[in-house]
Image (cartoon, rainbow over all chains, first blue to last red; front, side):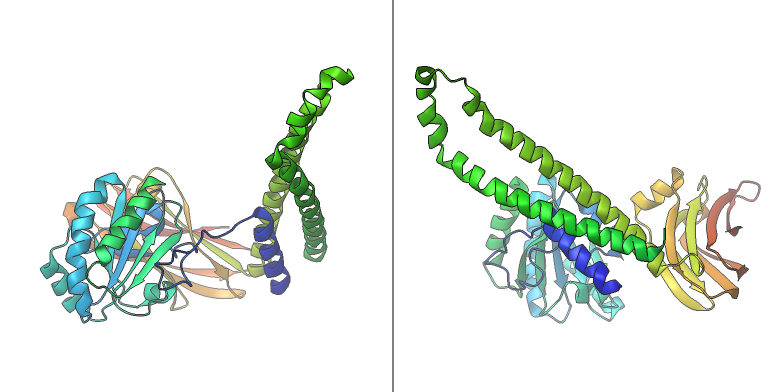
Amino acid sequence: MRRVLLGLSLMLSALLGVSSPVASSWAAAPSLVGKNAPDFVLKAMDGRNLRMSEFRGQVVLVNFWARWAGDSRQEMPALDRINTTYSRAGLVVLGVSVDEDLGRAREFAGAMKVSYPIMFDTGAAIGRDYLLQKMPMTILVDRAGVVRYSNVGFKRGDERAYLDHIRELLRE
Amino acid sequence: MNPKYRVVSIIARGALLACAWAAGAALAAPSAATAAAGSPPTATAPATPASGTTAAPDVAPADNFKTLDQEVQGLKKDVIDLNKDLFVLEEELLFPSNTQVALYVSMDVGAFFALDSVTVKIDNKEVKNYLYTAREADALLKGGVQQIYLGNLKVGKHELVAFFTGKGPAERDYKRGATINFDKGIGAKYLELKITDRVAKHQPEFSIKDWE
């Protein structure tokens, strides 16, 4: 019965013409690019609960980071600058820690002094949904809630690519 | 209607729609190609007065497009209806009314409590842990009722425990529980987790209502 339902659902999707946007060449995790961003809700450091789907209509940059990933130390200040500049234009930056040690992750996040919300995925459930491969990982979600770009790791100059894609998505 | 007949009916409707869609696409392709080329209307237009024919050939392609567009819109509507039927059917199959248990959360006033999360345990097993965003809590305060859990339970006695966390009076962290022992009979069971204000004590009150 489930197979029949699944088959019918697939047929309906095909009929409705639901198609994924073209994947970017920048994408290092093509399996998630072009798909709807999995929804999640997490508690931020300031005590607020934030739900991914509530940012529909805005461009969202989700940065998965870990205290033990050296690149995160370089990437977070760059993202903070991007957030400061583009938050008024409709960009939302979310930092999600995948550290198991919540106390030390909080300490690290506090020391980084970033202006965007930091959340903690201690159970790694959200990381699994987002098919995390390597830390840090940054994804860009468009206004319709579709993952458009994904970047694994961080090296100098990546922030320029982020800016190009952010501007492109903000214009849509 | 019997679920078997509903499935057969839905499959038949789906197949019909697929055929109609394919036919529509086949019709649209040559028309679109003709329109893209643009030559027939411009080529025939000067010849029309000379031959004494009406302007019908110029209007016809536009009309064709209009009817085709209407057909496509109709098909899309049918597909959406079919999808809705499938959803209802799936829910009936996954949660048959004989074993279905549904939990709802409601909040009244909320002056003494800001809801942060609800954890639900049935027979000592955690079935749901829900974090509320400010918008969701606000929606509950405005009279919204949220279905927090839908599942299956065997007929018999069960225990449900709900833990509510949030900010209580004077912004203090607040965690309270509410318990209910209920009999699951034949037929769906509906339970409501209610958060109300007890004005006399300046405290929130948590209760579980069994909707018979």
